[in-house]
Length: 366
Image (cartoon, rainbow, N blue to C red; front, side, top):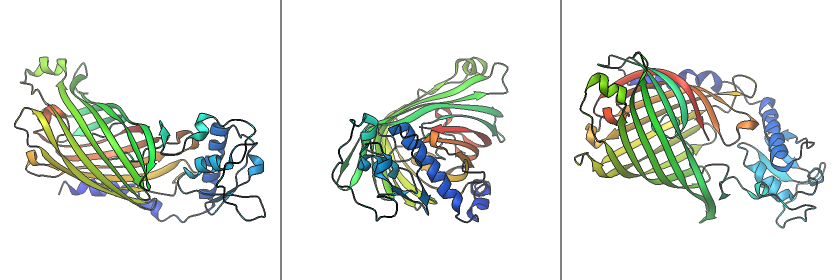
């Protein structure tokens, strides 16, 4: 019965937005987004892009000598925006050869969405409900019927950084680095004891083509108990660390639904008797319509994981809330989420425990 709470929580904030019809607000949001890209990347603060039904016709006369193809490629990185090159009152034109520029293109102008050094977008998007996906976040969690913990603070620091992207075999490829520190604190203790910290680092290779994306990675994780927690509880700590590899596949159905799944295995484990195999899957719902101006968009997600070491019992992580979107957050995600977890503890030193909690917090991905 408890496992159904996650499904209910995932839909609470999403259902009201699904009934909203498309309207001119979407075009205004895309116009604002395009204006910000033109200003910040190309210095075209006077450009006034006009979007109708998600389509923008880019007038080369407004680009002050910038390469129309380069500018169009940058604007095509805006989700939901179709970009053509042309002039008002005439048919759009295809630009295959660079048009001479009056000044050299800056390095930022040469970047496309997924390729080049330090590309601005990730080929494989972050998983919203995965408790161990690297991100910056701070949340409070209320444990249910736990033998030690009641009110817990969760502070996480991490990110996915694509180093280089390239085009090949009809797809966009990226290599990069993932790293994160996941910590929980006992907020009921007089000195807010640090209970557990997990250190995670991975080398991912990602690919995207159309609505399909995938990520393969090798990773390392080690787990450590807090000093104050050890002094107060005198527990026998586990020297928990391991390396592993996994593969995740993802498919987007428009801008509304994302499904993903995969699995992997562990090697070089300490203790050495850890069972290696695990699987993961889930879905994400992202509303294309805001609930307040063009700033707040409902999101909801459910992540399900099971491991051989836990007798394949499923762990459920559900999150739902609001995502903040603006031109200033291009390539980043800021979310305020309510969350629910039921299953095997994702906190390393306590991996053998079954926990349940409700919570809320802020999550930032870049």
